[in-house]
Amino acid sequence: MLLDRGTDTVSAVATSVRVLAANPLAMFVWACLIAAIIGISLLTGFFALLVTAPLIGHATWHAYRATVEPAH
Image (cartoon, rainbow, N blue to C red; front, side, top):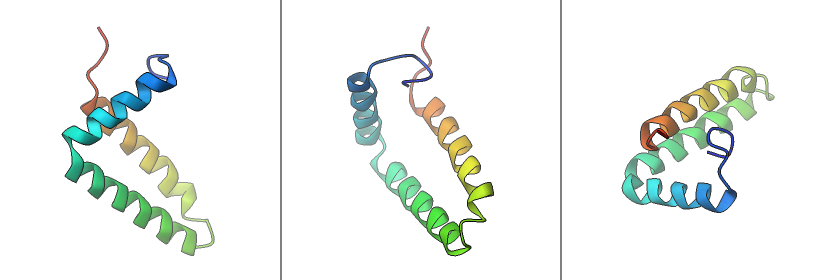
């Protein structure tokens, strides 16, 4: 939100809390997937992060767009 809409930090955090409250299971699963993928990538000597970090970032962007209403 900070980059997408230029909002302040407090508004971005409040929005994150609202999204978490509305989707706790999905957010928990996503957090576990991120931790597992990054953890496995670290075991490869950071080499796999060249692929996994951009993929996770891209997927997170799509999740953000799907859970936060677009600004009109």
